[in-house]
Length: 297
Image (cartoon, rainbow, N blue to C red):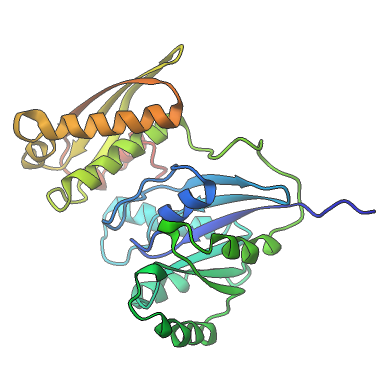
């Protein structure tokens, strides 16, 4: 009797900004490893999540949202991250928003390599008032593009993700696992701490702070079951510094306290977190600054 087939492979999660890629990754892996926000362009670097099952191990690569409008060095690096990811995977999981297919989706589709199979996840179907509109929408996409499958999902609610995995797993090569069963990400704790602080900037500052903000780890120390983490929030202008700090420092305290709680949950340890704000004009166009932040330029 032959042994059951085991498949292992890399799956790139791609899509234009704000279609729910990071939410989908977190749901598939079963734990928060990629930050989320209602604001687009939250993810700036490739983040790897690992899902291990009895029959397969899927190594997901969450990519930044592909940009065609902004032209900073950071944006160019993010777009390059998308195209590089596509050349190194076994399957592309292309995420779009239900009934909201536009020219940015088309621009991204042109970047998809012909040799890599594509599964289309139509996200946010739970928000549709008229579900009947999905049938012609899916029919049109199936005629326009070469797709292995189209699966409607509601990533935020975790709905129909089993169907999505049923479409992806058979496309992976037969291979043993690459990672241990309890591993869920290849990202370092240092990187994850940076991302959690950055998420709070997006979530707590709303439209007050533009994308001219970044997070840099100054020191990261582990002493027994305690992480001591020292973080600087970098903004482009002095006026933005006051927005981050808030009246009486309340906004910065809230950012730090919420990030610290999530770090303690993720790292399963106590965390001492110290956060301050620096002004570095033009940081998004400075390759030296981006390198210090751990962004591969």
